[in-house]
Image 1 (cartoon, rainbow, N blue to C red):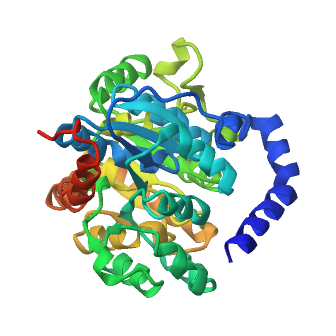
Image 2 (cartoon, rainbow, N blue to C red; image 1 turned 180 degrees about the horizontal axis):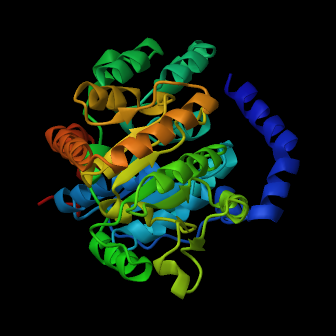
Amino acid sequence: MYFVYSLLLSLGFLILLPRFLCDALRHGKYVAGFGERLGALTPLKAKGGVVWLHCVSVGESQAARPLVEELRRRFPAYSIVVSTTTLTGQKLARELFKNEAAKVFYFPFDWSWTVSRSLDVIRPSVVLIMETEIWPGFMRECARREIPVAIVNGRLSHQSFRRYQWIKGFLKKVLGDLTLAAMQTEKDAERIRALGLAPDRVFVSGNLKFDAGNIADAGLLADEFRARFQLTEATQLIVAASTHAPEERLILEAFKPAKSATSKKPRLLLAPRHPERFAEVATLLERSNLSWARRSSPADAGDATCDVILLDTIGELAGIYSLAYLVFVGGSIAKSGGHNILEPAASGAAIITGAHTHNFEAIVRAFVRQNAIVQLTSGSTVEAERELAELFVQLLSDKQTVEDLGQRARQLVKQNRGATERTLDLLETILRTARADNPSLTTR
């Protein structure tokens, strides 16, 4: 089965190569770190043991911050290295972990020879995989080298579970290479057990994203935005976070009647999920008849009064939630499964999300139960635009409801913290065993 998997991976790579080349030429994707993806890494300068933490992209990197901090506190003799899959994740990880990680690099393609080259350089004592990135070739090679591999902050959506069931027999062999899986919820744990992971290796630790809170230096970033765009406490700023097509168009159309319905002159900040869409969204703004400004452009006199701010930068979104009157979390009208609501919730923001939130189903359900979020009821884009426009008008004139939503959201985040401690408690035996192999490693 591993031979078939490797063959299919190679065929898929060849079939998608024209697309990769096109995206590389247009957006610079996949070019960055291509050598690293082939396992060509520069030597690692690390003393003692190494913990390899793999984060797919931006969300996983943000969620991993408290885990990295606690790892360094409990096990200071370990060096931490961080890998990512995406370009945006790589950029953010380099910024987030510049003082914590001995190395930040791209995860290798899942062929045995590329994986072996990476492992030969990194020589990890333990591998931690954020959420549920299952790479059969990588996990098999780690098992051959007797390197413990653990899933942390694991989750399995209903859609992913259904897809994995098609290869359940093969997946059971792959999961046999896992030392343990610390899953977010009991439902996630139930699903990974159903796919074949031994029950005594499955644990429920909670969601690390509840512990992530706000980014470091968020206050400085918020102050910069306040000064440049003249955002006062009275400003009703609607932040549209991690948006996908066609959400920007729908949000702009919903914003126009809301802007006309109040004398308070609300403003909008658009933060597209993917950097390659910044130009596309800029074109939408050009056609919108609204005044707008790019975050990445030099400061201009028009910044103080523009209707819309285009956040065309990476890693700043979490730092400006504290400025928001309302936050719409994207990927939820577009059928992408939604994005993380916990960062705006930790800031005490009033949150709106669309109907499609299967990536965070348990979290959104908990927030809905506590009346700590407003979720659109319609799954159609036409009805969602109408519903969103009505909500904007209603909430812009109802400050008390907005404040109550934000307070309940922040309280719910506080009540659910602690996943980092639980995860490290589960990992401690693995880390101490790995440490025992190297007497120079000690814990505090």
